[in-house]
Image (cartoon, rainbow, N blue to C red; front, side):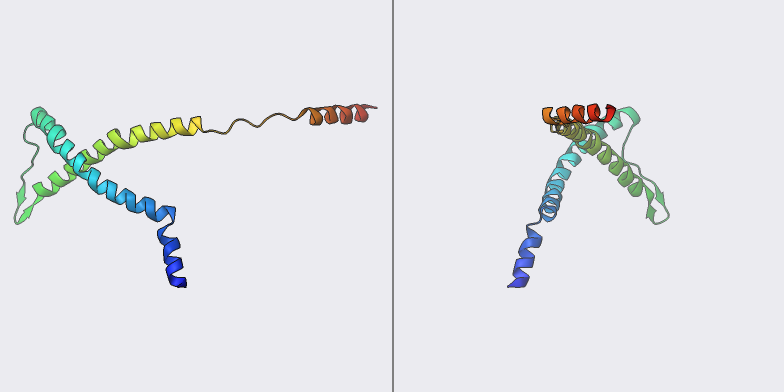
Length: 124
C-alpha cells in the first residue's frame, strides 16, 4: 500500500501533470505548426526563391533531404517562437506586473512616534 501512496504522490505532482499535458498539447500543436509552415510559409518562400525542396544526391546519400529537414526545423522553430513563445512571454510579463506585490507600507504611526521619542532622548 505504501508503494501505491508514493505512486499517487508522484503522479499528482504538478511537474508530472504539467509535463505530460505539455507533451500532449505540443504533439497536437505540432500538426498546426506543420500545416501553417507547409500551407503558408513554404509557398511564400517558393514564390520568393523558387522550389523550397532541395535535391542534392551525393553518391548514395541524399543531402537534399537533410537540408530540407534542417530548413523545415528552422522554419518551424521560427513560427513557434514568433507565434507562440514571444506573445506568451509578453502576456506573462504583463500578468507578473499586474500581480506584483504592492510596495511595503511605511512605518506605522506608533513606530514613527517611538522613533521621534528615541531621537529626542538621544539629543538631550
